[in-house]
Length: 200
Image 1: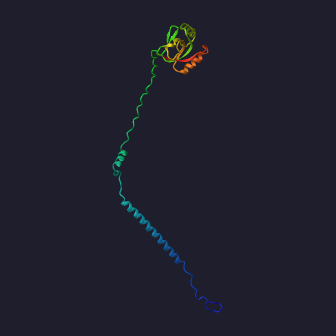
Image 2: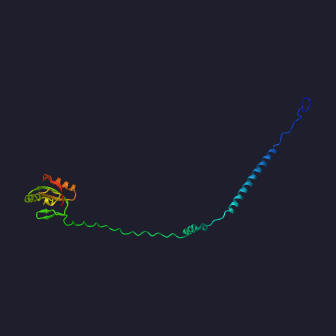
Image 3: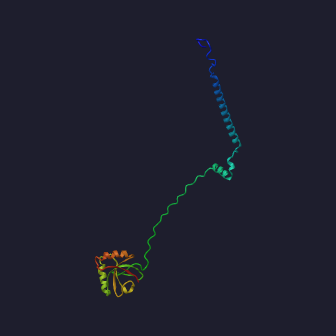
């Protein structure tokens, strides 16, 4: 109403809406949502239980022979392994060195050494002469105070020696290198000494 003239100025006046209606609607929506969620959860649980009920239960014996063997293996006590018996270690004895065969070693004959016909080895030639007597005298003189086995051989009896000489030899060696070292050592006293293969 106008305070001056007294006429109505707000014919379309309406009362403000109440807050109770929106709250009631929101509450109803929440309740429906919770109820739907509960129903969905229950249905999922029921489906899971039905799936479990349809699944057959397999026992350990249904695995066939392998399952039976596995069961027997699990129930059978394991046998204790006995430690392997240690065999006493056999002692290897070194066999004695074989004795040299006949004819493979120089043979002492008087003051000098003789070269067997079957022997093939290296030696050191100290002197070559045309006279046996002079060769033997030289050999006896050379053997005094010398550890080497010194002797005289006739070169005509061996194919590896030049013919027509009597050779004064010193020692017997299986390898050429050993004979070379011996020749170097003896050459300090007997000039012209050299290694030589003696073979019949």
